[in-house]
Image (cartoon, rainbow, N blue to C red; front, side, top):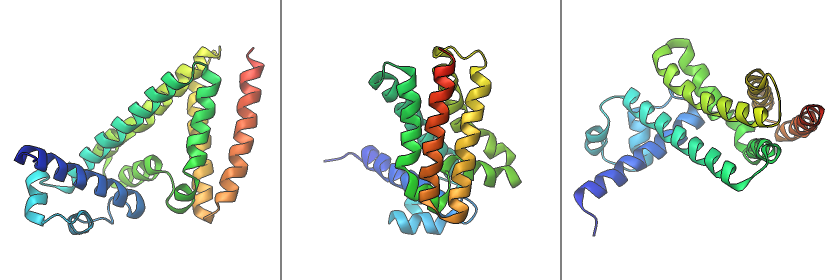
Length: 195
């Protein structure tokens, strides 16, 4: 039997996971407390026990996403000894999310764009998701001998974001996959040219 503290943590985690999904699918500004409480099937009184404001929920969602990104990147580092294989895994991750990306866009990109228009303080926290990928990509590229690994890492992030935006605008997963094929070919060329 769970203690009250354990039940409270389960309830809080349920709110965060529900908010994460709704912020991605609907947008942060289009999602209300009521939407989250209803979708999480948690009474509003219990909801307010954990989070006083929607910004508090956003902070928890960003922390949740950051934790998952860190864990995913650490898994890739353990799973693949070669930096090239790790970079391919990054592309596969984008490809594996193709259906959602073509429908909703990038969860990191769309949140940062939305917050950047009217909530710069919240955007600064959300940007940390990009920072994790940027730093990880730069480390992989540096391991492959690229002198401007940081610049190329930003290029990779920018290219991935652009592909996702166009795929989402047109709702076209086929386009996403075609561009990712080209992205992989480009990556192979970039990596092999440094050897």
